[in-house]
Image 1 (cartoon, one colour):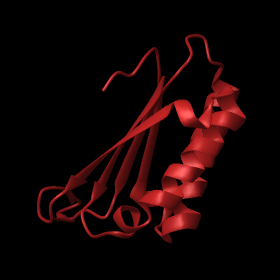
Image 2 (spheres, rainbow, N blue to C red):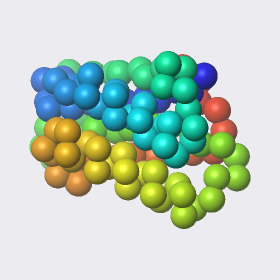
Image 3 (cartoon, helix red, strand yellow):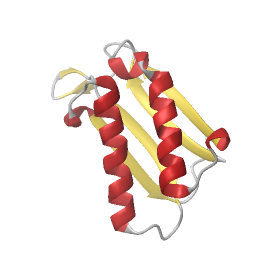
Length: 110
C-alpha cells in the first residue's frame, strides 16, 4: 500500500479542499508510480491555529510526504515533486512558498 502524510493548517484552503487534493495525489501516484488509486492511504493531520509558525507569523503552509521506490532517479523525483506543488497551488490558490513536498526513498508506514 502507498501512504501519504499531509500536514495542513486547520481552516486553511488545503484543509477545505481535502477531497480534491486526495484525488489529485491518487492521479499523480498512478501517473508517476503506477499506483492503484484504491490502494493509496492518505493521512491528514490538521494543525490547530497557533500551533505552526513560519517567519514569526501563523503558518498557512502544507507539508506533503510520500516515499518513492529505492533508486528512483532524481529527474523523475523532481518532476513528481513539481507536480505535487502544482496540484496544491492550482487546487488551493496558495503560493508556491506555502507548500513543502518531500519524497524519500523507502517505505512510509503510518
